[in-house]
Image (tube, rainbow, N blue to C red; front, side, top):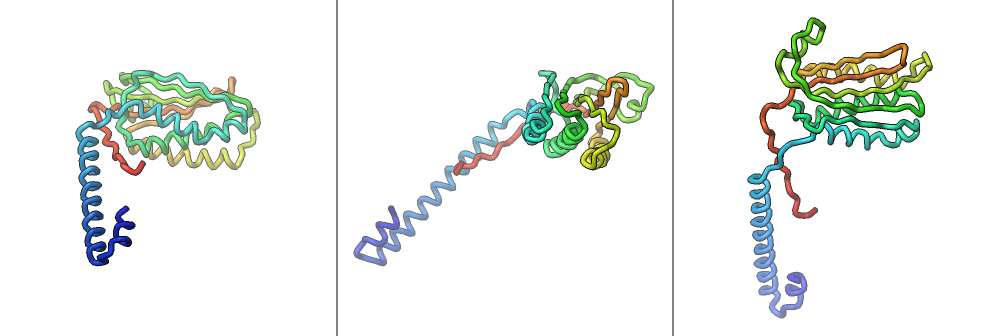
Length: 213
């Protein structure tokens, strides 16, 4: 509208001045509106919750094509009251991605993958967990279960995934967690378990609002 006004006004200098004035008013109004929206966002933060389950769903969606190609079914058994972990979202997403990728490459065709979550307090233990987990501290456990292929030969994809899983173990350890890989040779079932300390505080999540979306 201001562009039309500028070109149609008989006084060209007045038209340019009018255009600059209107444009400045619009910019100031946009800036004021954006500041007000961001103010509301900061003063009404979202409570960080169900992060683990949300990230599991995200990585499952990411690998849905690969799961379909192998005709692998997925089930989940979630602890509805699972607390938040101290692990940042980006790192936790990377860990879950690595674990699921290994599971997909290792699971038997037309097999089944299951995710389980639960929270617990670690008690006294004489096993290796004692050196990694603190007593009487709340932990969130994430477990992936699947039946492996009967083939004894390891595929190149599975070998690569196993190598990456070793790197992921270090990421878990550096975030005060623990990873454990177990296999029941008789049943051919493998499990990958993750333990992470729970966050004691309520962590607010500040969502940036984009007025253009």
